[in-house]
Image (cartoon, rainbow, N blue to C red):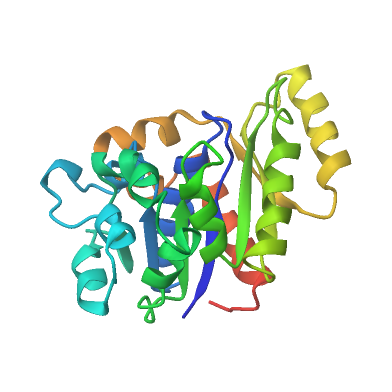
Length: 261
């Protein structure tokens, strides 16, 4: 099984889903690696951003996590190939919003996604798009993952709530997943014309000096437009600044994990 990276931040609007979709797509396309994207956010935006109609999805991530005993057949029925090179998706569905209630009485409920992903043997990377909260779905993601990638928007409240997120990661590491680590902190929506941006970047470096990616994702209209066309940005506009940034991030992830193109 390949490396499992959860993309998480309980603060909404920080580029979490955008990063999950575009990073997964750029690694799959440019580096010729097989990638699985798990849309574990009830909003289902990662599913839509990969050109999949969640309303027509028969088997979703909800089905594999609430199943009493998820087997390989059920797992594989949830995996959908996208039109994009080497990229597959396990889509979300509206039912996922009720998954926490469905799982609350289950034994080892924090390990349901991990058990399902044990059947994902043919992928080099697995990305989990977590919901913008620190509930049972995110707990499942962290229990299943090898590491957590944290996107941070370049704005005044960037660091707000991050201590809670890092504490949750530490608790999951102690209780459920001793090997869990922070993959890195990614600055998103960067606009170098603003003085505030430089101040925020300086503050983030103070807190996460050793964990920050050198790649910074710029504020870019093509990144914003791509999801409405059901495409990752590298397929929507190959020459966009946003595409170049996510290609650079893909290379940085691969270098950190010792894999070559």
